[in-house]
Length: 126
Image 1 (cartoon, rainbow, N blue to C red):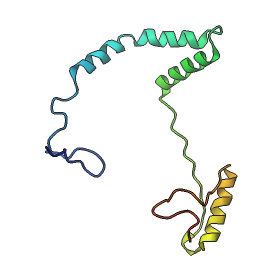
Image 2 (image 1 turned 180 degrees about the vertical axis):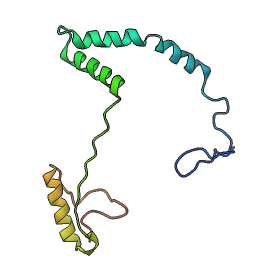
Image 3 (image 1 turned 90 degrees about the vertical axis):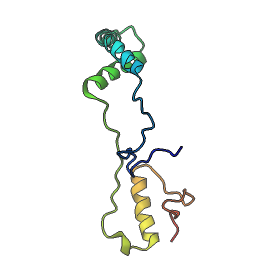
Image 4 (image 1 turned 45 degrees about the horizontal axis):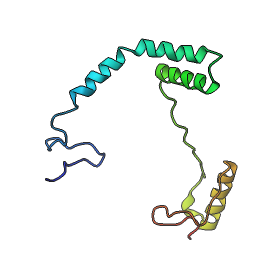
């Protein structure tokens, strides 16, 4: 049996054979519905733990985070952005590496000459 075809973005191609022709099992939907019946009680429990000064600090913080995540969603992950500015194609590799090293040092990072290859090249290879 050949595996189902996927598009380049990972989605299933229309008209192909489904790897799960029966769909999502009904049991999961039933468990989800049962769990949702306890949402109010679970939120009340989280709120009481978060507000109870006698609970360990770690439990209060975890409960507060869980409440905030459910109320506002999880915060987006931070992504570091470094800008070298200018046309990098005209720079010799040693100058480019010096600029990159200075930027990384400013972020508390280092540039290692023995780093894993990136796109078939090692950093520092000219």
